[in-house]
Image (cartoon, rainbow, N blue to C red; front, side, top):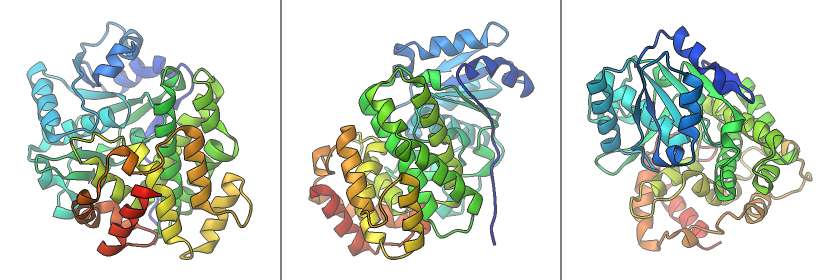
Amino acid sequence: MAILTFQTTTHFDHGAINNLPAVLKELGLKHPMICTDKGIVAVGILDQVREAIGNEFEITVFDETPENPTEAAVRDGVEKFKSAGCDGLIAVGGGSAMDLAKGVGIMEAQGGPMSKHAPLAGGKIGVIKPLVAVPTTSGTGSEVSSGSVIITDEGQKIVFVGKTIIPSFAICDPDLTLGLPKHLTAATGMDAVTHCIEAFLTPQINPPAEGVALDGLERAVRMGYLKRAVADGSDRQARWHMMMASTEGALAFTKGLGAVHAMAHAAGRLHDLRLHHGTLNAVILPVVLRFSEGVDEEKYARLRRAMGLAENADLGDFIEGLNAELGIPKNLGEMGITADLIPGMVEHALGDVCHFGAHKKPTGDEYAALYETAMTK
C-alpha cells in the first residue's frame, strides 16, 4: 500500500522572509522563540529575520544550538521557552537549528528524557507548539520533514519521527544562503543529493516522492546548480535551485532513507570529532551505492538519467569524482575516523531507524567492511 504524505505550507522565493509576519499572525503567535546558533547571529542573518518580523511580536532568542544538537541543549531551550512564556517556535539556521527546535517542541510538550520518544523504543510524539522553519542552508530539508536528529544523554544519535513535528510553515528564501562558505555549500549540497538518491532507492512505494527526488537530483547535478553554487556563492539562480533541491530531498525521504544515513548518524554521534552530517553522507554514499548495485537495476538506470550520465556509468565513481571537484574529504580517515571506532559505529548503525529502510540492509559484518572501505578509499 502506498501512503503519500506532504504537509508543510512552504513560502519559496527570493525575499520570502518578508512573509514571516503574516505566517506568525496566521498561526496566532504573539511571543515565539527563535532557535538558532551563534554563527547565524555572527553573520547577521538573525538581524535580517528580526527586521523582517518587525515590532508586532515579542521575540525571545535561543542561540545555543550546537553543531550536532544534544539533549542538553534541548533542555536549555525548553527552560528558556517556558521561563519567557513563549507560544511558538521559529527555527532559523541549518538542520541543527531546525532539529533542535523540534526537540524543544517535543520536550516542552511531553517532558524528557528524549530517549522515551525514540520510535524504535515505541515512543509516540504528541502535538507541539506551532513551528515555523527558516532554513539558511540548502541541505537537510528539515523545514518540511517529520524527523529531528538529537544526540541523547546516553550518547546515541537518534532520529525522532512524528507528523506533529513537521513545521506548519517553511520560509525558504534562497537569499539567506548567499553568504554560505564554499565548504558548507558543498557539504550541505551533497546532503541534499544523498537525500534524493537514498530516498529514491528505498523500497517503500511512493511514486510522487520518487518523482520529487529525481527532480531535485536533476537540478543539483545534471543542471549543474550545485557546482555553480559552490563556484560562486552569489549566484542567486544557483542558490534558488539548490534550496529547491534541498526541500525536494526531504519531501522525498518521507518514504525513508537507508544505510548511508545509518552509517552517518553512527559517526556523527562521536562528540570529540564533531563531524558534519552532509560531509559524512557525501563520503559514505559511493561506498553504499557500490554495495547495493544489482538490487534494482531499473532504479540505478533512472538515477543515471536524472544525473545526465551514460547508461553504463558507475554511480560510485561519479559521486567520488563530484566530491573531489567540490572539495569534500576523500575518505573517513581524513575526517578522523579510526579502526577502533568501527565496532561502536556498527552497533549504532544496526539500531538506527534509517537502517530499516535501506535499499539493501547490511549485516553487522557488512557495515564493518563498508566503514573500512570508506576509511581508506
